[in-house]
Length: 424
Ligand SMILES: Nc1ncnc2c1ncn2[C@@H]1O[C@H](COP(=O)(O)OP(=O)(O)OP(=O)(O)O)[C@@H](O)[C@H]1O
Ligand SMILES: [Mg+2]
Image 1 (cartoon, rainbow, N blue to C red):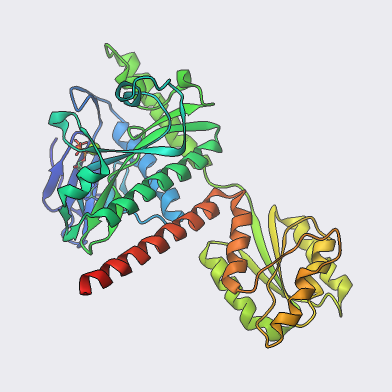
Image 2: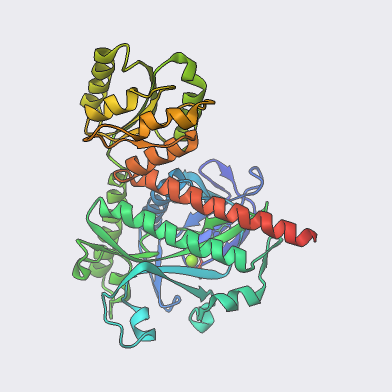
């Protein structure tokens, strides 16, 4: 393939690597970044089967961009930055970890050959995670975690040890689960998927390479016969122009469907405070909730002193929003949360402000009249997290942000522990 000098206004430096479906260029004007240019090329069987397919580069580029935008909005650390041209995108420059990370929800394909006796369609809960060493000449052999750890890969100064492998395994499953939930919105079953990780110039592990119709099996309505992924091409004994047209139409359909994978639920978290004196506490809840991507309103109203007004405000929100959570912040005797809870079917979370008399006051939130189901937490973070968990039932991006936060917290602890151990 000819090497262009410029793509999408980006001046290209040297060709770093050329694979079967992409070229990777240095960008002298954007340090630490590369440009990945897709080819109009489809291949299978480690490149043994290969065809030119006009328009595939543009479809792959858009598919990949839409998938990575979903993952970025969920908080996954990605090399992908943005689209650069119809067939190219900008990415952080990585040294790639030579492992393919595969996740499977249903058993099919090569898994069946390697695991005789397991029927096609066997469901893995949690999803099955497998690793393969990237080596086309030897058909990408399956590797155990121990083999990866013992290989002691040093990638951009980072040694890939057990902590890094654990992180990538968990991140791999999470990426799968996020996209599985996304595709469920279009009644498509994500059957299995392959991803790769790289290490950027600062030593961070990033989800890298691409995710497109070459990366997964996708069965509309969970029906294998309706498959719209590259397996259709793999299955072809002979390849006619009409066959290639079908493959391309499928890929184009997938690219278009990705536009409908954004959560379509409007949500709102309304923090009611009984007095403006509670504002500091409420702002802490609002900050934590907004960091999780939640849309938050703050309102001052007292259920004791302005009961009708409190209920009127509550009803306004009930009228206008789909996924709704109320958080009640009231000091001393908390009438606010229980009154809201007794008059709505939306969830109410009590989060009383800090006080010297917390131990006595908390009972007004806990010992509520019969028929009321409000919850009580005392830390601002807890209120925000619980609100996010409730909204996350209907909005997979919010759900994903919670999972990503847990993943990153656990990894940060492992890193801190590793640093300490290395000091001793
Ligand atoms: N952000 C990145 N920075 C540097 N290299 C990258 C990045 N993302 C992907 N690559 C690498 O670009 C190369 C070209 O991609 P392509 O998918 O065409 O290769 P390939 O022929 O499929 O070979 P492979 O089996 O290694 O994927 C791959 O080696 C891939 O790992
Ligand atoms: Mg590749």
